[in-house]
Length: 128
Image (cartoon, rainbow, N blue to C red; front, side):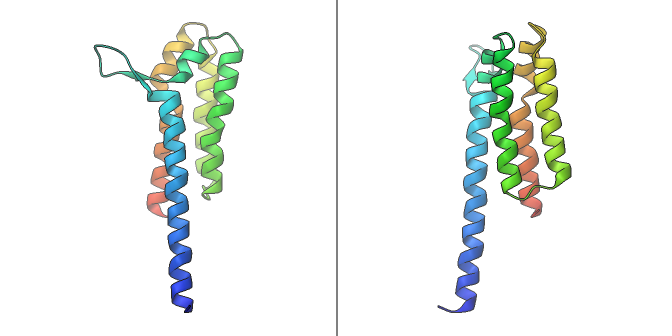
């Protein structure tokens, strides 16, 4: 096998790995932010506002699950600035989301995970 063939296969493996990571991140984001359409509307919610409605434990668990998207971004080589921005999105979601009633509505609208996936998609499109 030539060096060029090996390099092309290595690049394809990296691109395939990025695609797979983005698919996993999108799946988690969909489950947490967009999985369920509110009947009679185009508005969607996910598990984040539903589980987050449970006092204390709900938002804590959802915040930990949200960190999965951040971890995938780190594995894709996201910059420190990008990771900090993503962590800020999760922190805002966790902080305001922990306020009874208001937090549940905020979780349904803020969609921190969807925001973070979009940030990573832009990072990958730019090439790092």
